[in-house]
Amino acid sequence: MNAVLIVNPTSGPSENSQLVPDLTNALQSQGIQAKICPTTAEENGQGLATAAAKSGAKLVVVAGGDGTIEAVARGLAHTQTALGIIPLGTRNNIAASLNIPTDMAQAVQVLIEGERSQFDLGKANNHYFMEVVGIGLEASLFPCGDDVKEGIKSNYWAAIKSFVAGFKTFLQFRPHRLVLRFDGRRARLSTLQVNVCNSPRYGIEFALAPQAKMNDGKLDLIYINQPSKWDHFRHFFAAMRGKHLPHERLKMYQASTIEVRAYPALEVHADGECIGTTPVIVEVVPKALWIYVPTPELVVTFTQQNSAAEKNSIFDFIQHPHISEPQIPNSEASEL
Ligand SMILES: Nc1ncnc2c1ncn2[C@@H]1O[C@H](COP(=O)(O)OP(=O)(O)OP(=O)(O)O)[C@@H](O)[C@H]1O
Image (tube, rainbow, N blue to C red; front, side):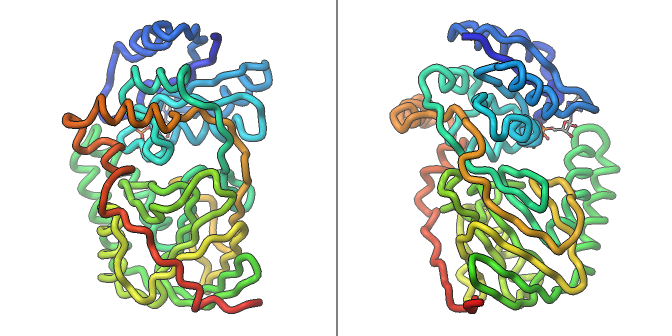
């Protein structure tokens, strides 16, 4: 089989000078001949993916972190070209959400023994996303988070300064009044942040909507009405462990279109990229992308292969006994 391999040589926590030969060998061992297309600081992979789809490629394999996977996904949206994923990032949330293993050989095995299936994307105003839209505090904090991540790689002092700047933002941020309209309902609230999830996991492994499915034609809307900062902090800390804060004002809904207005306006990020301020309309784009994912049998095989050694692997996440089915209260939103 022929494929285009889009690889981000800078993804992940450390450099690997053998990355491209390793990838080429892993693909060749499964009979895949790949044309190598590295990303650059200017070309994040979206343009490479668009060009590959236009030239009729049946398979584009992306080797990179979540940012690179999302860029390539945007380039392949609404095409017949299927996406294969070899996760190389620091968090690999998308791979975890799709049960794709982080082991290179296993990820390549998925391209041959897995299944080609259609998945949803989300659209916030005109920006496509795979994982999440965050409105409010999180969007204001994301730039500091990125700086901390970069600083940890190269400059600890810069990382500490960015962390302090983020902490200041957290302390100074005040709740905003919001109006949400979604699928014929309306909610008025005062909150620090609203999230709209397409995938179950994002960011620093936040499992904010662990029940979210990337192929259900729906988005998951989550917020806490009138939270204290402490509520907010505990909520996200719990989400990092796959739990939900038992909070009476934690609201979760499923919807296909969500309109958010805030007074005053709030910043909005889509998959960690700032895309402006409210008002924003977030909608699901069903079946926008073909992706190779493991069959259920393959997930079992990989789980067995990785069992004891991989305590912190994606399989812990998908099989964790304390990820509970959250309640979906519908009490607060009124009919329009
Ligand atoms: N050749 C390159 N040189 C420098 N930067 C690059 C290059 N190719 C891509 N980038 C940048 O890498 C970033 C995307 O990194 P990516 O998300 O894939 O890895 P990561 O941050 O390690 O992983 P994760 O998002 O899972 O934490 C983008 O900002 C993109 O512009």
